Length: 97
Image 1 (spheres, rainbow, N blue to C red):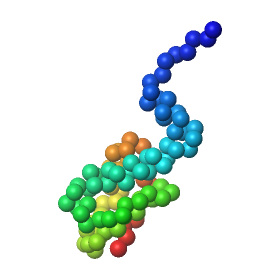
Image 2: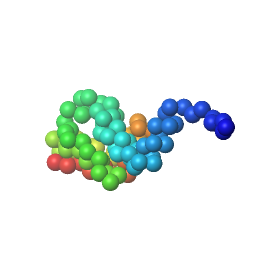
Image 3: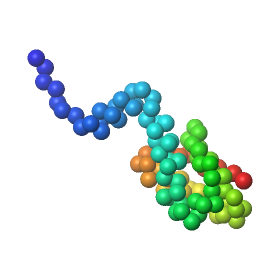
């Protein structure tokens, strides 16, 4: 009889997600969910329809000056989004009109 070392449930779930190609999709969904927390509710009110596709985060920004401000600080936003989900998921951000 073989002895098995017990594993944490989180480790088992993580392995399952990776092996079935679901980890990236879950992380991308999490990025969309933390957008408001990262930029703050007052600024998030001027944004809509956040989406992740192929490492790029897309978000509509209704204010041209705010869109320019986001653009100038996009490297910091990428870092903060990735920090919020605990993985390098966002490689670029596109701010749409």
